[in-house]
Length: 183
Image 1: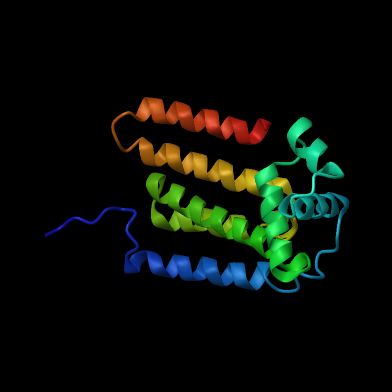
Image 2 (image 1 turned 120 degrees about the vertical axis):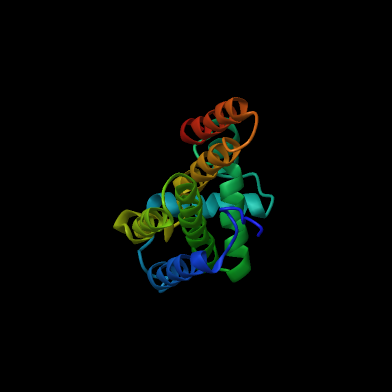
């Protein structure tokens, strides 16, 4: 009999995946053009993102990304790409909701390596239904990418600790995670 790896996508893990997907669709996708309303940070991120995606080095596209590093340039380029796809805020906000979905799946992946699957599912579900997650990941805020990046860094540490060279990879993961928080 062949032993399957814990990270395989077995029928046992389909139900949590389907529930997380359903919750994401119900909470994050409706009314992306109008709800919640626009905020100053989102307006700035969208403007800079459109300029970066179009190759215009104007307004905050230079000062906010390459000099003072207030916003992450790759995140803003993603926002600009989302705007380009739909010609309005819908595309940019949709890509941000994908960051929430990716973060939830990553939390589930991290949790499955440390705890029983039910606890991992509960953690991912709590992240998705938390009102602050819904509010922030439905808008264009750079910290959405930071949260996703931090979750990926932690998952990398967990995955590498299962193999040889765990000390080096754990140290690199912590260094990368620290970079996400302190830009």
